[in-house]
Every structure is written in C-alpha cells, then in structure tokens.
Image (cartoon, rainbow, N blue to C red):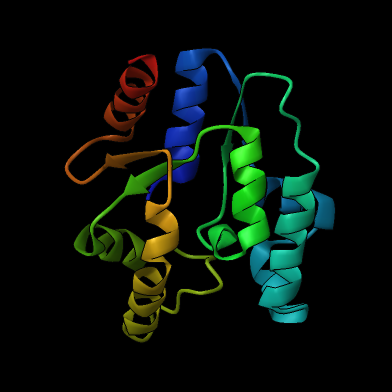
Length: 158
C-alpha cells in the first residue's frame, strides 16, 4: 500500500511497450463500485475473493505488466498464480516513506489517517515475508517512479 505499484507499473509498461493492467481498477470496473464501497458493504474477504478470481483469469500469452493490491500476496493460491503469470517484482519501500505517502492519501479502506497508522504498519510488517518472496526486489526510497521503472527494466535486461 503506497509503494507505487500502479504508477511504476504503468511507467514500466510504457517503457517496455507492454499492456498495463491494474487489478484494483479491474475489480472496480467489474464490480461497478469503489474498493472502499466493496469493503464497506461486502467486507475484505469478498474483495480478496474478487482478486483471486481475477488473477486466475489473467492471460500469460502476451506482454503485460500487472499491478496488484498489497494484500493479494497473503493467499498462497494467489502467489502461485502470480508465479504462473511471470516475474514478481517487489517495490521495497521503507516505512517512513510509506507513512508519508499514506497520510496524504484517501480512499484506501485499510487506512484510517484520522488515527495513527499503527494498524497499517502492523499489517505491512506482517506481510513482509510474502513481499520478499519475489523474483526481483527493487528499493524505491529516494527514487522517482520513473527511476524505479528504469531500474526494473535494467534488472530485467540483465
């Protein structure tokens, strides 16, 4: 959450001349409501089921960059599907950077900036083993999204 997956993914797709697909946006489109509305009316479990269903239907036959939500990696089935689709890139972003970004964001159902971000930090820490189980880890602190996308391209080329 807040690492820049959508922004960097879109930039990377442009650099590589690939199609970009943001899974959160695809869910919003198929459900015809925002993620916040889905969480409020159906709950997180329903949303995670939407992620899994969408992920299982993605194609491996063309050049694509997918941006996922931060919680998709918690389910083992999802991690297996992600590996089927291609390389998994982890945008490693330090907590201080994330905290600054999340305090400025809105519309994230798991972020309540009226309180402190302790629960979000705990969630981030709990997910770290899943995030680090990636094919490529790219440190993003102090880099612009364009620099991160270029760094990924260089790593993929080598």
